[in-house]
Image (cartoon, rainbow, N blue to C red; front, side, top):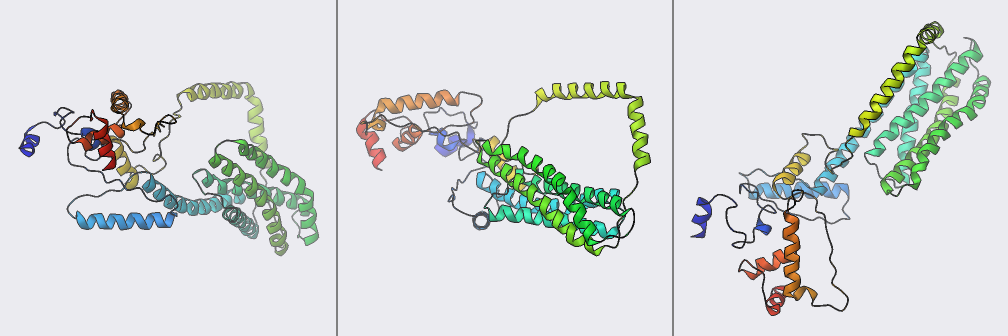
Length: 388
């Protein structure tokens, strides 16, 4: 019987006209006949939470029916769901790390512990306001957007550092008063604004990009940096009024030491910097400009691991879709045997390319529906398959 014949033959040794292998392998069955694919197409309007609940429901159901088998979830929707969960975790890490990094930088400049507390409050409020703006504006939080807290933190730390140093110079180690704080903040308002607007204008140039993802990222950074600048100054005005005095660390001897060393070895440093730039620039030719959908997930993540397996053994993950429209006035164009024969020739030619894992067309489904391993030669037979 056919079953016995299939068992004793090597996998894939049958002639293609015996069975519709293009529909079976590698689309839904791997070449070793151990793995099968179940394709589920969820609605596009589902939220991230709906996607996650759907995946869990489908996974539990499949485990119930196939308790002894190993079930994995992969593909675009699974990658999207896992990426959203990863981004939610990463933004929390970014906020904590940004506060720690800000604390380290500010402690390098200022001695007063209460001044550090005020600056950290400014960093935290700036990040919360920036993320709140993105949520209110309906902007999507993507992989690119994870750098927004970093840029907001840099702006807040820069404004705080300059303000602390200037207040220390103004008070000369003495006590602070509210009038002095307002005067210094007013004096530094324009430099702070110019610093923030320079960064904002740079990222605002991304608004002219054709990609909506990049446009949203540029808009998010530009507005968040401006928000950080003003929020930090307001926080400093309120918080520093409660501090009796402020003192910064004196790094002038160290700065003079490094300045002298740079001047003494300026020729050597120039050659070293120039050589490094040339080497790095030449090495930039080897940059990998390719991208895959699931590369952003960690290597051991289940959705990525499953998707990579599907990509290798089950005919690929994301199809390259071609739409072929019949000429006007040719309603029965796809009922013509000659048309289907051309389509079959085209697909066979594409399958022969080493870059193509698998390809499917209307001709494959018509051949499978014919039940004879080949395309029908009569238009009525094709119409009957269409009707069924």
